[in-house]
Image 1 (cartoon, one colour):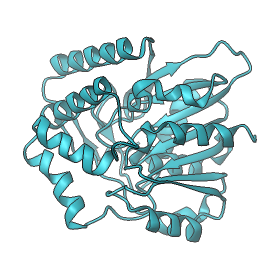
Image 2 (spheres, helix red, strand yellow; image 1 turned 90 degrees about the horizontal axis):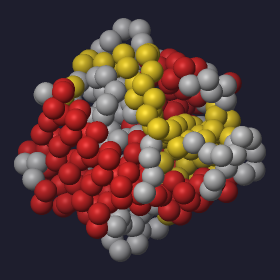
Image 3 (cartoon, helix red, strand yellow; image 1 turned 90 degrees about the vertical axis):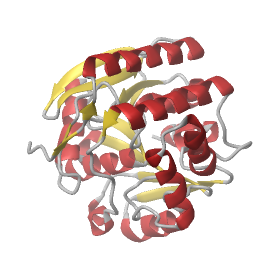
Length: 301
């Protein structure tokens, strides 16, 4: 696979240790342990976290995270427990994002991320699974569905970055650029409260909020991010044949939900359902009701 860009930590050994310590804090908060699996792919090593289940007949869910997040964000405050206990869950740390995976990335406009996602599933011995992606991860999920529809039972897009361009509203640009220009805890909190969450309906516990703020400050200050940002896939989406579900929050500043919903209906022929959550921000993957909605729809298969 052709490598387009490379991202990475400024001090790999020191910064990866910080990330591992952060994972330990999350594990203590959630009172669980995440099984870590490192696999070799065309983008280098990919780190995957696994939440196993004792149910030998369980189905499989593969999760791809948003930009400048970890896949572990999905389980703040044990949020993934809302999916029920009948799932084997793999949380994939996408290469090129601030995590323990290597930093090489393909051209986001080509098929590379779909090739890589299929490789990850093959290395994990996953023949077919449900796939879910938030923001950037929604684009990765669609690339996989386009390239290898036979590997996906159904795809769940959560405030995805592939259904419209990034919003250029003054409010959105202000809150997104503020912590990049000045990565302080105060500015990160402003961004989170304005764009990612919607208090008091959609918010984290105090400990989980502290974890996400620490991560964001760390990622902004310690990670050289050269990874391309998601783009509107437009007519590419008309080739998607996999059952697709769209979950959006009505307070998403980054990708306003009305346009995502309209484009999903217009472009995705296999769209099965659209669920709009009131008083929910961009970080919908942390919202319990969104997980319960996914679980309900997976039960129909």
